[in-house]
Amino acid sequence: MIKTTKMILNELKEYCNPHSKIARLVKEGTYIPIVKGLYETDRNTPAYYLAASIYAPSYLSFEFALAYHSLIPEAVYACTSATFEKRKIKKYETPFGLFIFRDVPSEAYPFCINVCKEGEYVYQIATAEKAVCDQLYKISKISSQKELERVLFEDLRIDEKEFNKLNHADMIELSGKYGSVNLDLLCAYLKRRYKNG
Image (cartoon, rainbow, N blue to C red; front, side):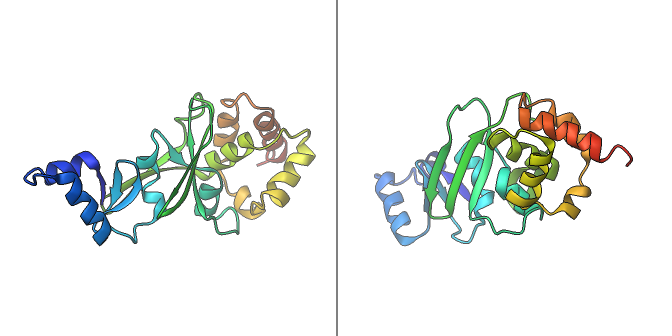
């Protein structure tokens, strides 16, 4: 369970020195520090359950979401999340792993996010379609639809069969919210590739 320092201090209010008690509980492993002011009580909690508590507002996306939706074959060792209007990439090394947060445009941010509940944890993650768009937004400028196709299926190693199953209408609608050459190319590419269904 995720707990803040404030929550723990409230639980320990009968102690004359609750901060010392917290330090002892951390040493004993009752509380595992994540970032300043934030603790987890279960060392086996999957890292992605914690991402939104570390930095908010945010939702899981980019490489993590591509792997989560089985679009790429590689295992992903960092929890990558999207934020907006933060203007710089934030990285947190924690006992649960590496967390990376980076901006997407605020116009694109609120769309196509799934809210998932597992036990007492709630996390938000991009749909597969949104993860592709977010990933294309963060990479270097692409110059043509031919290069885009190479980037998608060779550089990013997105599974072409899985890509074909995505909701392309959603991706076309989303692509216009980024103000990005890469996403404009994606829109044109999808319209050309799937014009006959």
